Length: 69
Image (tube, rainbow, N blue to C red; front, side):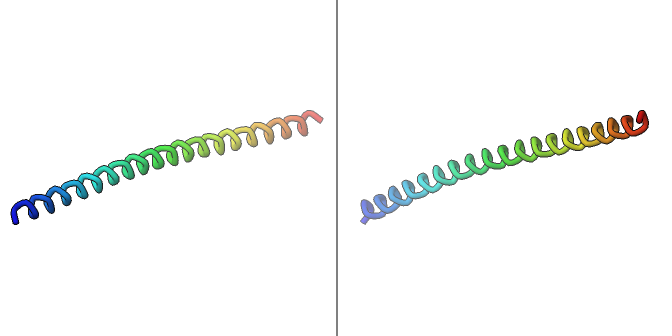
């Protein structure tokens, strides 16, 4: 009887360990994905800002040319 209970406990311990390992791997992948998402959002924001500044500069130059003409 005790050996059956011990075998059951061992099996449950193996299942729990496998679940913990899978959870840790999933959490790691999630963290990595969130980091990449954050980096991409930052790069998009920077690109948007550069584009904005380029548009302002373009308008400024067009205005200067119009005033010089």
